[in-house]
Length: 130
Image 1 (cartoon, rainbow, N blue to C red):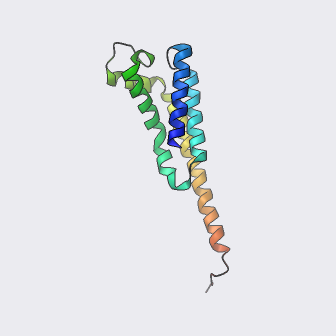
Image 2 (image 1 turned 30 degrees about the vertical axis):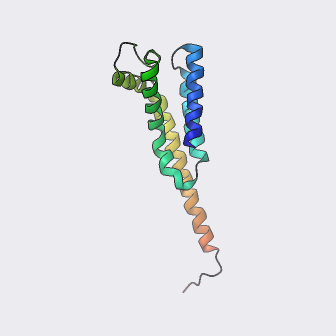
Image 3 (image 1 turned 135 degrees about the vertical axis):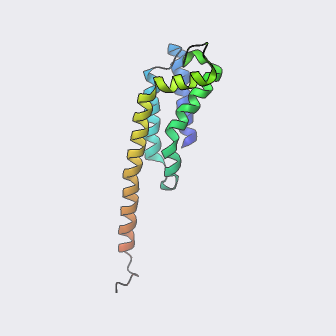
């Protein structure tokens, strides 16, 4: 899942930079979509990984861009750390939306997993109630 989301974000960044020379709403929408699909597609045992993934994905994206194409996320004369923070600040609204959707979906899925487990254990004929 993390590899697929990373590749999707890479394609979104490349497309956005080719079209606009900076990250725009296209990147932000693709980021939220990657968060949403990741939360829906992951196995329950990987919920923690997906739960911490959105901020790491965005910070990693901006760190790579700060190294390779600083002007796409910040002023070209900014330092590395300033460019990363600037990129995060400019896209923080969509980071919050993606993160909130991810955590909300994972919470609903966790409840569903617990509920399904309770139903399965209650349906076992080998359990004797005393």
